[in-house]
Length: 515
Image 1 (spheres, rainbow, N blue to C red):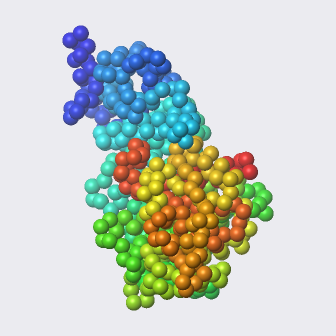
Image 2 (spheres, rainbow, N blue to C red; image 1 turned 30 degrees about the horizontal axis):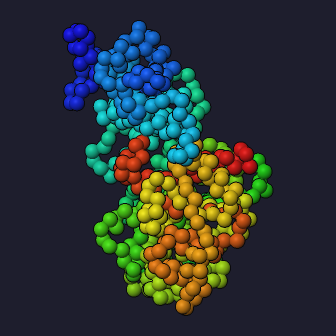
Image 3 (tube, rainbow, N blue to C red; image 1 turned 120 degrees about the vertical axis):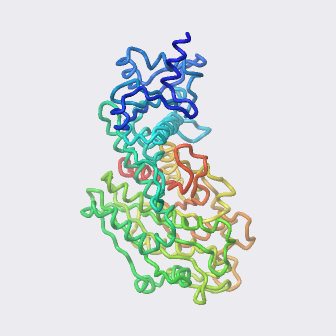
C-alpha cells in the first residue's frame, strides 16, 4: 500500500508540487489532454469514464482508473485533477468531473444541465493546464462536442492585450475522431469572445469609429454575403434622428450609425431578422453625471452593440441561411458646454417629442431612433439589446437577461434558444401601467424617465421603447445585469461577459432552420 501511495503522489498534482516523471522533451512540447468522468448513478463516490477517457485508460492498461480510485475522493462536478507522466504524447492529463450522466433539460433552472456541466468541467480542465503553461490541449468531447468546445474556448479567454506579461495562449482541439459539433462550438464561443473583447477594451481604444472599423474588419472574410455601412453624423442628422444626436452632442468623438446586412438566405426577398444594439462606447451619464466609483465599467455600455455585431459575425462564419440586419447607433455620452441639459426637449425620428429629465437615461434615446429607422426594412422580427437599466440588475442580477416583448411567439423562440446555450432569458412585464408613467410628461409627448423615478425602472424603460415600435414581433433584451461576470458563470473569467451572444446566434439559427 505504501508503494501505491508513493505512485499516486508522483502522478497527481498536489497544492504546490509538480511531478517531473515525464521526459524533458515531452515537457517542452507542453501538450495536455482533458478527459471527463461522470458520477455513477446510485453509487456514492463511484465514477464512470466517458468513451474517450475509457479508450485512453485502455491504452494504459487501466492505470488511469486505478489512479482515480486511489488519488482521493471522487471527482466532484466542475472540479479537475491533474496526472503527470501517464502517456508519452500527453505529459499532463486533466481529468474533470461532469456530474451525473442522466441529467438533461431542467425546467426549474431553464437550461440543459448536462451541457452546462460539460462547459464548466472542460473549462476547469483547460484552465488548470493553462496555469501549467501548456500551450496545446486536446479535449474530450464528453458526449457533446459543441458544449465541450464552448467550455474550452470561453474558459481560456483572458483580456491581456494591454499587459506586458500575458497568460499562455492555448490552442484547443477535439481529442479523437472529428465531430462537426466541435467546430460549431468553437465558432459560437469565438463570437462571444469577440463581444467580450470589445466590451473589455478601454473607451479610448474602442471609440465609435474604432468599434465600427473593428466589426468591418471581422466581417471582411464574408464580404460576398455582408454589406457594411458606416453612417456619418451628417447622415444621422439627415435622417432626423434628433434623439440620437442629442446624446452624442457632449462628446468630441463623432457618432457613427453602423448598419450591417447579412444575406444568408437563398431567398433574397426573405424578410430579415432585425437586431439593434445600444452602442454607448463610454457613458459618463452626461450632465446627470454618474458617481465616479465604478464609472470605468461604463466602457462596456456598448454591450448591446457588441453582442449584436458579434452575433452577425458568427452567423456569417456559420453561413446561416437567414437574412439579418444589424443596427448599432454608436456614440459617447459626455458632459460639456454642448451637451443636452436636464429638461431639454428633443424630437425623435418618428416625430415624437421627448423631455430629457435625466441625461443618464440615454440608451433609450439612441435606440428610439434606431428602432424607427429599422422598420423601413419590414423585418420579420425586431430584437434590440442594451445594457439599459441598473434596475434590471437589481431585479434579476446576473442569472438571466430580462426580456420584454409584445410577441408570445418571439418569446418562445428566444427562450428555447437560451435553454440550449445556458445563457438564460426571463420574461418581464410590458403593462400599460408602465406606459402611462412615460407618457405623462409636462413638456413633451414622452419623458425619458418614469414619473415615479426608480420604481419599475427596467419596465418603464421598456415601455418607452415600445413607443417607437409598430412591428408585431419585437423584443427588448435588457442585459445590464449580465454585462459582467465575477464568479457566477464558472466557465467565464472575471470581467465583461459578452452575454447573450450565443443565445442570439442560436435564436437566429432556429429561425434559419425552422422558420
